Image (cartoon, rainbow, N blue to C red; front, side):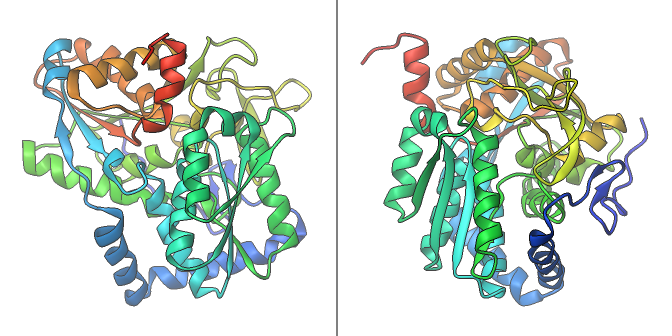
Length: 402
């Protein structure tokens, strides 16, 4: 397998091969260009990098541990499994890496108001947290269905001073929340910055979000070399829009020996409107600012999606993932709701770690793959978030009573 060269990807217009780009109303072209220019200036500014590093270390809680899951490894009887513990970050998930980077950009641009979309609520909580830190007004758009299944995170956002707007259009989940956030941004571009929460959307968001999350893979690479004196054989991460996965994968793309597996939401099975696995029946299209694989019908109408995990319940996938899949550098599979729920309980009872339902999809893939690998092999699973937010939902599904 040849390693993918990433030095010229994306290109100057934000294209990852045929994917990506900037497909937005004219009104948004200027704020996107302003954001792109400020981001590239900040990348070269030592003061910005020092400030970001300070907050990631002292407030967010980096670096996160790379933890050997000894009991899970022993029970499966195959490859040695390590967990990259993003669940231990402040606010409970990897999302705050990107939220912190973007709030610092917003401050540089003189913005006073922050908006965001959220599915599982972790990005909403992270955005509300950094907005409170820097004294900015914050509005979070969240599908009404997700507000119900992630009620704990709704309360957390409100505690942090954010206004949470339930979106009742369409499927009432993440896609509709993004639509409403974009409508808000068009109306309030002078005062407002949109902290988009995943490696999706119009350029420069996929590039920028990926780079704010690269620290996951950079740390994991350094840590596995310290602990095992060699690189892992396999990386596994769940993929909704794809921010936690691309953050883990990207620093390893040049290492030909390292295989990578992204895990989408298989829902109730690969049947129309029963899943959110874009590489299982999706097709090329444009949605919410970028070109990628999308679950759509023959007329280009976006299909309904389903996942037990709100954060993976989305009809499109980040353009860099689409490119890496077509380049055959990263493999993509799916885990069903039932497999994710089983992994959720298994990790809790074997390791004392309750994972987010999103992360449980990655754990499910590890449970399936590890026994087929040698005991000399190494797997790193990105535990992208913790499962406090999902406990009541899982308890109801599994009839666990107090």
